Length: 317
Image 1 (cartoon, rainbow, N blue to C red):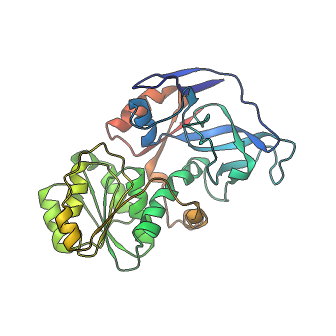
Image 2: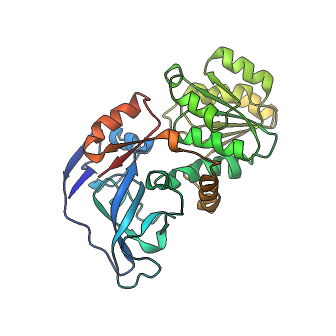
């Protein structure tokens, strides 16, 4: 079967190649992969900014159909559509084989049946959406009436816009000139009250607005620096973005004004039931963010995302 693998440490070393079918244990499911999303971390793995344990099949945003079950598995049947419920160790797509392959092994205890009314492409993003949910709910502690800024108009940023809006906040989203055609209009569609192109003029406007929470999902040094300069007194900056720095953060202003800068990595699966319910109710609509491509076209998909074209590509084996 075909799979996309990171074959060695260092930049590059991605290969689309034939590998054997995975073997499963007594507590495992064999999944025929329906689709697997391309995460920014997959691009970082190619660049060797994000670590992994090669050789390994990449891809951790997956959904599939049960093709076979270990003899101790209960609660599933062959043909069930299933999706991510929780991660496992070694983590798929970085430390063990992930979803950029035709079939994959998954512990049954880490999967759940795809909730009714949710497509497999949408379900592949459960693993993604728990991250902005954590940023908004756990780290930013966003409540109704809060003023929230989100920088970065990728999947994490747009997810944060949508979830903050669901929580009752007034949200302003900022991106780059390249986001004007597609990503910022989607931000408006999912709940942003206003969108802006990041720069001095936008920062001046945001400073007057005085947001209590700033979710920085781009990883860009200028965005972190801007947040430290203009977020409200007593405010919180949450940084799930992965950037290489260095950052010239206004620590003096942050200290004098009791501003918190919180780094975070990964999500909180405790929010997954709410995410699924919001999707079923139509309150969290991620369909405009998704587009599908064949797994064999992974190179084009990676390059598209590097050019900030589209939001989320899901690869279909």
